[in-house]
Image (cartoon, rainbow, N blue to C red; front, top):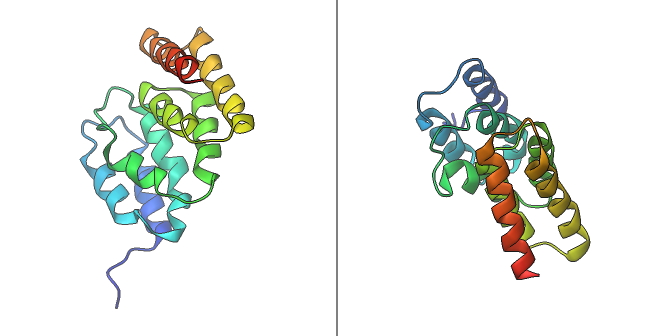
Length: 145
């Protein structure tokens, strides 16, 4: 019998973690490491991003296990989920992830991601920290262009 938990069980555990604010990211880090490299890891990304959204004060690392796991997913599926997350509730960490995405995409896609960053910078409901992070990344991207 295999020691690999089904992704459905892992997603259920992530959903349970979403029910209350986190005091520590340790459980999430363990889950991220557990699913890293698995083909079905994309199924956990919405919950992982939601945990980032709901717990912006948590030290998620630089970049940390969550980012390593999410960025390790092939294709652009996680990028689209990241955009949805940023449009819902941007955090400095998800904006940082978006900045990393912008660094490696073709020009036509880059403009879509820059527009999402601009929206985050202008959101009146976003914290000062979020707006400041978005502005900093926009300035960085303008210098790189």
